[in-house]
Image (cartoon, rainbow, N blue to C red):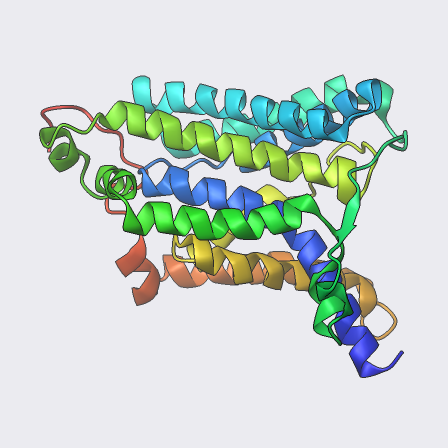
Length: 309
């Protein structure tokens, strides 16, 4: 295979594999911009993967499966919001519990569906005209699903919403200084609930994509730690939806290369690449990377109690 063919294949598959990471990261960015850490992304994604497969297999409509995947992700996120925003429990503990709960519940419900191929998968698109552009056409505009292009469009829209509208200012204010936002008449509880719920919807879609498009079948644990990559990507992107775009597709390329390079390097080492990189990102941010300290929401992970400072 010549270099051009190799590059086309790598970028195309990086886009395909980066889709669930992008959707999950966009949702987590909004939750964290409102001040709520949700470590339950893995649980929401696996529930979305199971729900999308089960509904698609039962009805023959993958679009309906993705809709139900979004709903189950949103419902799971609301549980996290209730525990952390209303009860004011520790956000990290609640998120970890949600991940374990989601993995366990999906595994239990999915026993009868294990290993069955999906009858009707989410179709891929080839954009007429653009797909004929040399090199770029096959890379970007051929054999991708609608979720690839919707994800890119959504990243741009969410960036504009977050940084160019009053709604975005309200969300960022709640994440930076909820007491000040409250004094200005912003309903902190409502904003946090909505952002966490929105994050759950997108995580559910990201998980659903795996079982109806990328690997159209149900396998227990098929998210394989992608939810934790999403957490790292949120930090890597500095809580910016546009930066999440190239970050998600970069991680998608790492995943793809972990399979393509097995003839040259130890497969065990290659499969660790995405996770090692995620650990490096988290370590750098934890050790005091100035960029991440400067961009992280000021009240991230902190419950808000009216009247307290």
